Image (cartoon, rainbow, N blue to C red; front, top):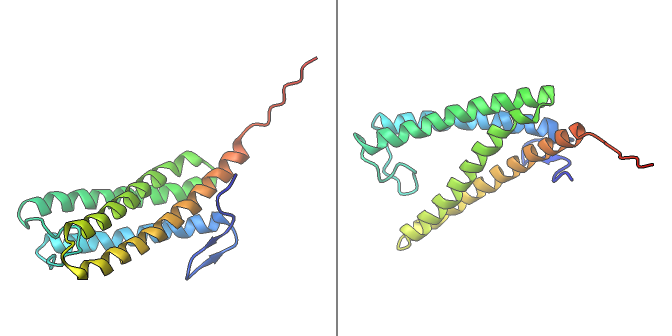
Length: 169
């Protein structure tokens, strides 16, 4: 059974999850490029002093370079999986959608844990509540995109499932 039948976002209305999944892939590519640019900016000495940034407590010469490289590699994999997902949707091959589903699930889990870490790690600062809530709002949008793509995965799965009837004499 399919989770979603249409894919609605505040900016785009899609009548089916196929075109919605394509929009999710475009959103993922754009998001990855923007976050890669911001990560490179921080690795080159840009401002990372805000409490709610993922690289806040890292040293610019040590751990920031390592974790920034991990983030950049992750974003490159996310871009590649988005392109793979577009190809998979076009040729109806659900296996090409799995890398995006897995990597996006990792991003959603990271956002949930990061929001909790912000609230519990810096509980004495009231100013952390708004960034944590904004992070969770963004996470909710990512969950909706994940459900849209998963619905397209289910549709392809149902189309490719063989209908076998056993006829006993």
